[in-house]
Image (cartoon, rainbow, N blue to C red; front, top):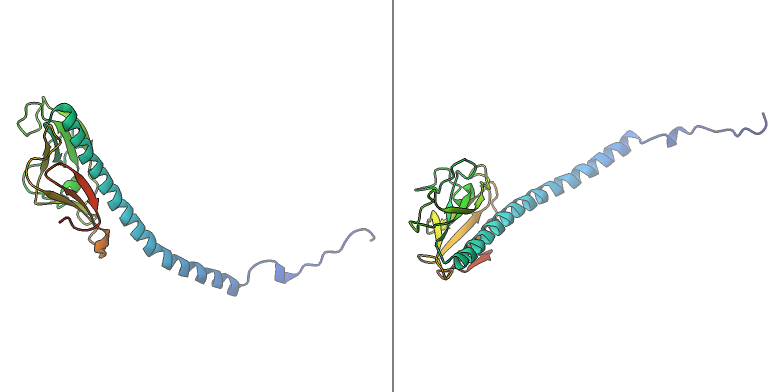
Length: 194
């Protein structure tokens, strides 16, 4: 038979050996063992940074709306933002989420410092965390609402928001802080407010 090349079948070139496959699996498992903790830390930092940015943005928005509307703009903690009749939370926080349970920004038209039917809801934010094990947004001193007057100042004294990491995370550097002066200016910090 002339013209037809002969192919030899070499068994060594047909696939991976068991030893080679086990080596690849070992290398992949080592890489995964190194990557998974770093990815978990990345997810935690991203969630805390997002919560901090949204709350900081809300404070800036409420302050600018108070200046624009001549005052009486309030941000209040609310765990009922998904209901048909959202309300501001009163009293202590039973879930331990603090402001992480959500908030409402409203124009207090009748200036009674409560959300009523005649008031205008400007913004609502639903819960960030499903439980206090996932994180929380707490205030020091404890406040359920923040009022801005016509000049963008807050009523009361200096306060801070602490955006807390999940309980399973032992790295305190993951906590963020929003420091709010009585002048109404808010700043984000990686260190506790002084």
